[in-house]
Image (cartoon, rainbow, N blue to C red):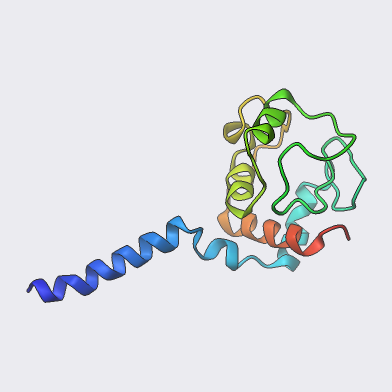
Length: 133
């Protein structure tokens, strides 16, 4: 009976490791769907380098230090997050897009967040693909 439990334990460990490593949500993002979902963001952000709006340009955001767009006036909270090593990798983007105010308390972004995990994965895939379009 113990031998039957070992494969289950192995699957549980694999599933947990996959979840903690970011899981398929980041790998399965669809840039085309993300471009459509990005319309929710487009009133305040662009993916054009150097073109800030109410929010900073998101061109080249993947793996960029938080609070680092030249000429944009960030909140103190965002600057502190960046100074503390905050980098916009897939996991950080996902957490921030899910709950901007909760993830970085005191930041200026008024957007309530994207609650759907697939929509966030799609937006992240679009941001990585757009990279200054």
